[in-house]
Length: 182
Image 1 (cartoon, rainbow, N blue to C red):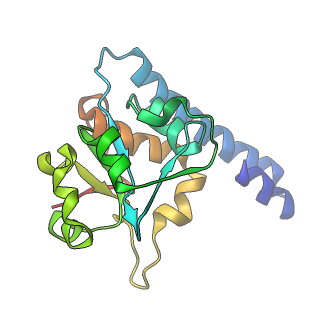
Image 2 (cartoon, rainbow, N blue to C red):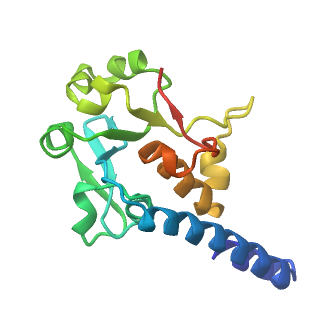
């Protein structure tokens, strides 16, 4: 959508439509790979606590849709919010303690995570090392391509999630925005 919106300001409607359709086609192709596969849906926890509050995607949000399209079970998928849900680490422990994957954390390493909160060690995804941040493409000045390009490339966000959740479905794909914590 934003590509078309910006294209109108620069009298580039045709190019914007072409780019939009290309990205949409790539997204739908990736989504179809998941929908046709005989897979089990791993569960996911998203984000982390920040000063006593944990924001997680509402069930009708962009991020919840990405999780669904990637074949990932998300506890709040049935929630009707299009925005974020404010919760606590205690609630996260109740509903996401056994999550297979943990995505969109701020830390760079598992050791760094527990400096934020020692209770992170209680989550299954932490114990198994299935924790991912969105810091793979940070430039020298600290700009993060996830925040700058990700919104315009949902196809790449979806492929990152598919690769994390179902690595055999995209064997030659390399993560674009996300990276596994060491």
